[in-house]
Image (cartoon, rainbow, N blue to C red; front, side, top):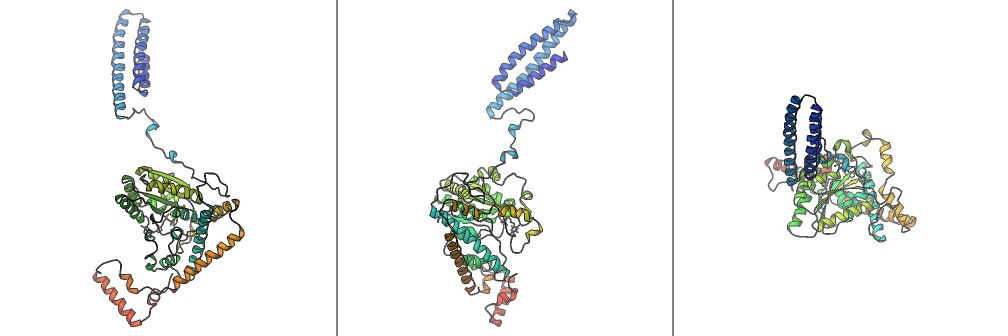
Length: 464
Ligand SMILES: Cc1ncc(C[n+]2csc(CCOP(=O)(O)OP(=O)(O)O)c2C)c(N)n1
Ligand SMILES: [Mg+2]
């Protein structure tokens, strides 16, 4: 009896795994089979009294257990069908989203050796050379800024070395009327966008007038507070929607930025309001001394978009053709009402976090060397050479041209008359607080007394 009973229970459990139709059929067959089987087993018993008793118990058991379970299964299955939720068997993985589902291989077009492994976006030879020119310019600017800082001629500076493909490749996709919303490290993006390098030097030199750009009003100022700019970017994108315009926003942040609440709020709003924004996350593996692994337990940063209802892309951030390809598609989608996209550029910060940092204290030279081999500028150069649209002569001319541009920008920056010390108080409050007013009057008195236009530099003792 116990054996039969367990067989029935197994049968019921088996049926439970199946859908309504299969379940009904199986159950019907199961009931008839089991009733016959139980009668056979009973008839094998010698004692007729016992036999009758067992017949009763068995049929009762069959009908009670099997039909009861059957009814429960059928009911659940019907409810399931209605609610589109399937009856879950124990350990059924269909109801789980796993990290493994997000193990992506970054999208690539140009391999590290410059060989083509994907569909090259349609860019003319002229455009390819222009893109290469911006990358070279950004690197020369970067080197100059580091030297100026070391000589006490610039403030703390955040280098962009190694990230030129992510920045130039994405900013190059923007139309004039689109918006660029940079983090503090987007020097190469700003240069590509046409922000005068003099302004960038001014900004890094502690002179906020560098951000009072007249040339490009569709580039927001660099943002030192991490990820706050993403919210501004979504705000701009929502305004574009309200005005029914055909524009998009490129809002940038680093891997560290994805841990900020602002990042999640920005993505949530963008998803809900289908804002025309592309989030460009440069995963350069480090947020100062915090490695990517300690930033988030997620397999990728790209997958974070899914939680907010839109798609994420992971791209080789040192492959400028791949970056250009995915960003231009995402921007076009946004301009056409397709909503936001998150793009994770997998790249590396070759330099220290800023000139105030010493990365040797927390990462190895071996790691840096491995990434130097993936240099984005070298990669594009190999491609241009292989395409026979570039040669050593053009390279030399380009280096000369770009070095001259950077030198001219340094000269213009240093020739700029010093900012008015009173500006420090000018842009925060419409009406100063009593404390600020007291400090302001003290400064004005001091400046008047000394009649020295370089007073601020002397007060602060120059740049660190
Ligand atoms: C709100 C805020 N918190 C902390 C800091 C200090 N800070 C400056 S840069 C940085 C790390 C940023 O890392 P990531 O977002 O990966 O950008 P990356 O520096 O790598 O370009 C931190 C924590 C800050 N500027 N703003
Ligand atoms: Mg980072």
